[in-house]
Length: 165
Ligand SMILES: [Zn+2]
Image (cartoon, rainbow, N blue to C red; front, side, top):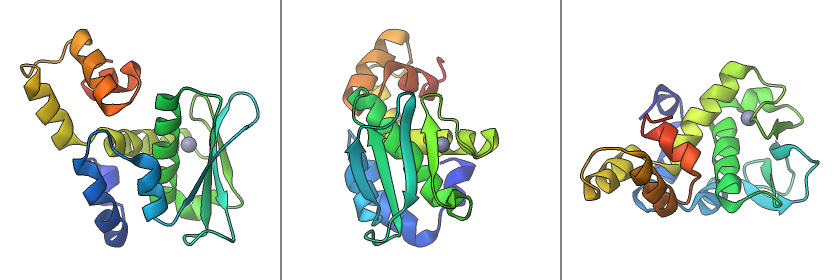
């Protein structure tokens, strides 16, 4: 796992780990298991998602995801916002909004961290290695397409994960 994963609190890791052995990863259920509310919503154009404080949520946070975007995209957005919750809670303040480029008022470095950890939550190392082995072990664009379908992520996200991006 990534250096971002090393920074995740032990109690959160314990909640997340069981979800990482299933393909596709049930990312919204994972968020709810972390006591984060997840809602799909109509957000402003060019906003993919947001995480903000919520009184009614066990963790104190709520994720909203733009329901007008593709489902693979919504899954990545949820994973990205979970990563902000895990890594950047003290910087979220009253809330942050992520653009379609996953940029927000947080620094680009923190956005890159959320993308890396989010990708790992959706495409866990062990599952990717195992799935790749089913296809002969070597990553090609065709195999990236097949794995993207299996993991319910975009081809672009899987290509990056396989080092083809
Ligand atoms: Zn972000």
